[in-house]
Image (tube, rainbow, N blue to C red):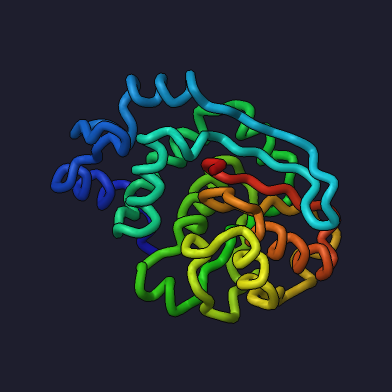
Length: 221
């Protein structure tokens, strides 16, 4: 109803809390300064490869998790209440032509869900914030209530590879199957480590009738 006021509200908010570069912290920049954006673009891996698993068939990893500034940002974003950093990651993605071309091949974007208890505690789903903003900019529908996490298990980041596979089984469920039947879906997540979470999510979506699954992550460990 008052959507026309949003640009005014945003401008006023930025006057009080000016945006900062999510990498170097420079005040007054639109979430990432030109210097940091240039450095990240120059070192972006843009790793795309075809997959022959039974679940997802293609994937794109934008950055390396082993770069100190990327690791620091992702950890802060995910675990230390730095929700504003989603704007920095969105800008990095949108400035990457290869990443945008990859995402545009799909009909629907689905962020990897987190359990409601964890979302209430953190205040946001880090993958959902990024997916929704990218979806608006690239005109790709984002569905956040189709794939849900029904069990609040031990965080994957605390487990080894084999434990991760066991920990994630039976954790996800697909609702409203009619919204994804026959659709090409790209799953959006922050970090690819062993791939267990993305494999399980992809499997559930495929069983529910998705025609093709791709995965997109900010960084690969």
